Image (cartoon, rainbow, N blue to C red; front, side):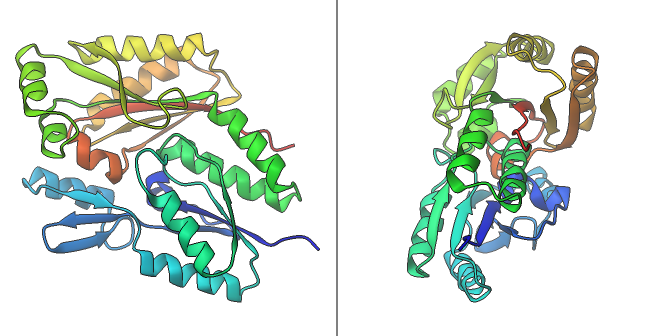
Length: 287
């Protein structure tokens, strides 16, 4: 008898903003924390409202989806006849969401499997949607993982904070490093990929956004990004700079679908306003 598999992703995939609804694809929100107030990312607070709080000087933090909400969802899925949870969530190096989902599935006596996307945002969402479509076509868990992992290995996410202040506030870098970076007017070009184990790591340090854009474009070209890939350009309350990067990507990759969106809150809360980013992934083979 064929297993009934539920695919789970989180708000770090931008699924709320993209308004994706597929039968058998479920989502859980990260928590956005403002002092003693706790919001559910995408449900009780939008990305735009989150960045408004940052603009107003609030020191926001983020946390994994509420355990009680996950338990309730999995209990309902079991009641609906699902046998397995297949998780496609934010990189495990960035959050303990994956382990929390696994523990919840165990409590509900549900089978559990996953792919570690080593990514965020639309790359993560593309993998979740593709997994759902592959299961609907009758592919095995092993084959779904193989195809997703093949695409994960051919992907990259770049993020460029406007400055280092918010990274210092969130504890991602030391005060001395932030001060030195500001003094030298350096912008860190950060990367998230299989190579970094899904962690945020420095790719290069540059003095201008223009130079960072050149480096990203060249990297994408070196990886032979083409019509079989998907590119995302994102920003944190800086649509003008985001559009500049979008135009550059369109000019250099005219055959590739490019999505323009807000950078998800779980990253933007740490990079701060003015950050921009770009990512690509080679599409999952669905046939």
